[in-house]
Image (cartoon, rainbow, N blue to C red; front, side, top):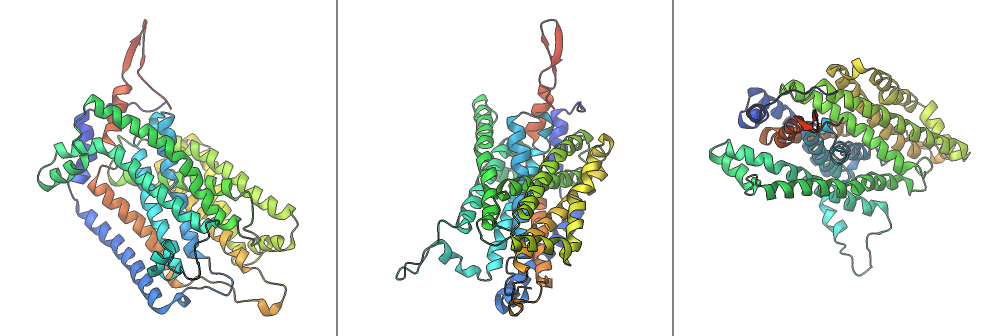
Length: 457
C-alpha cells in the first residue's frame, strides 16, 4: 500500500518549481565540475582527430572496444524512459507519477550521448555528410541498406525524436504553471513553449490522448532499437557474436540497466532536491520488485547465450568462452560483472526492508550498471581477441588507453550535465501528474460505501 500523503496544489507548485525559479550556489559548482569533465572529453576528441586513432589501444583485430561499449551501454540506459513511463502509463500504475519525467529525460540525454560514440569511434566525423549522402556516383558506391550498421542511425534518431516529443508533450501543462508563476524573461520563455495552454477541457483531453498515443507508438521503437543494436553483432560471422539470442538478450539487458539507472537517479533527486514528500520508499519498493523480475529474465538470456556457445561445440566459439572465463584480464572482469549485475543486488532486493532503504537501493542500482558496462565490454572485446591457429597472426592483447578512459568519463559527465541543466530549467517531477494523483486518491461514494477514486499499485 502506498503512502497517501496530502499535497495541496500550492505546495506542489512551490516545491517542484523551487529549483527552476531559484539558483543555489551548489548548482554552479556542480555545473562547473561536470562542464570540466565534458571539456576534457572534447579536448581528447580534438587531439584524437589531430593525431589519429593510434592514441587508442586498437590492435590488428580489436577495433570495436571501449567506445562501442559506451555506445551499447548508453543505448541500454535510454530504455529506462519507455519502460518506466510508457508501459506504466498505459497500465495506469499510480507509483509511476514522480518517476516518469526523470526516466524520460534520462532517455533523451543518454540516447544523444550514445549517438556520439560511433562518430567519435570513426575518427573522421567530418565525413558524416558523405555517409548520409553518398557522393561517389561514378563508381556507384552506396551504403548497404542490408547492413545493421545502416539501420542503427535510423532507429536511434527515430527513438530520440519520439522520446523528445514524449517529454515535451508531458511538459506543456507544467510550462503553463511556470509561466503563470514567473515574471520577466522567464515568463516569456515558459510562455513560448507552453503554446497558449490555459487548461481548458479540450486542451486537457488532447494532452491526455497525445500521451496515451505516444506511449503506445513508442513501444515498438523501444523493442526495435536495441534489437537493431544487437544485430550489429549478431549479423556478423565472428564467433562469440553470431548468436540468434542477442535481440531479446540485449533488450532485457537494456531494461535491467535502464531501470537501475532510474533508481539511482531518483535516490539522487530525493537527496539533492529534498523531495521526500514526492519520492517515497514505496517508489523504491516498486522499482526493486520490478528489478528482481527484470534481472532474473536477463540472467536467463545470458545463460542462453552461454549454452548456445558451448553446446554448439564449435572450436572457435568454445575458444572465445575460454578466453572470457580463464584468460586475464577477462577472467577477472567476468566474476566481477556477474557479482555486481546479479549475485549481489538481486538477493538484497528480495527483502522488503532493503528495497525501502533509499541508500541501499542507490548503491545496489549503481552496482548493477557497473556490472552491465563490464558485461558489454566482455561481450564485445574477447571475440576479437582470440588467437588464430597460426602464431604469426597473433597480435598483442588489447589494452584500453587513457583517452578511452577520459572519453568514457566524459560520457557520464555529459549525461549528468544535461540532466542537471534540464532540472534547472524545467520541473523534474511533473506537477500535473502529482496533482492528478492527489485528486484521484480521494474517496467517492459507490452505493453505501466509500472507496478510493482510483488506486493502483
